[in-house]
Length: 259
Image 1 (cartoon, rainbow, N blue to C red):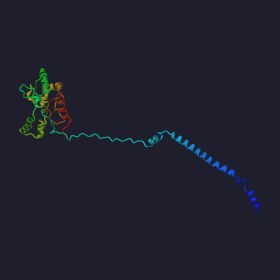
Image 2 (image 1 turned 135 degrees about the horizontal axis):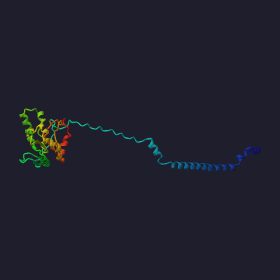
Image 3 (image 1 turned 60 degrees about the vertical axis):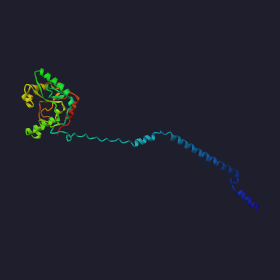
Image 4 (image 1 turned 90 degrees about the vertical axis):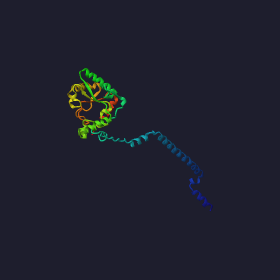
């Protein structure tokens, strides 16, 4: 019985019977694990450092290139086409305001014919210059009130049995005459009174002198041949355009081309 037991002990390998060596191997395992974990931690730390060195604006630049801001398109605004539908006129005549009585000055000895003060002074100088050259400029009509123009237009129309359109070719309706402004004047030749208020006035010495000299005194012909307003040619009808108010009165109105 005792022989069998010892015999069995001899059959056990030496490695299994050496219990102190088994304990030493078990202590080496934790050391290996700690070393491995430390190595992995070092690699992770190196990776974090490398990633942190990436330029901060690299991603922004890439995204900016990938999605560029679209350029807004501006549609051209069409230029409005001027029309003449809203033009205020009566048979080709434009509206004018009546000059205040306080701004009028006589240009004849009897005070019957008056003009705006600046226009009156310039006409008197022009008249004196013409007389020095042997030309007599005779004023026929200057400032007219709306009431005076009313009688001139409608009463004469009835007396002559004229159609309204025909009357408007030679006389403006009330409220639409340049004479209301105090800047307009009808001029005749004192040496040829038979040509007053007629186209034949253009053949007089007075008309020739006006054509050559009227601009020096800021007077101009209101209704030349084929004028855009369609008013009959009036070589005797002149207007003053020598200050701001007269320029605005006539040239702002001129921009309103009649229908």
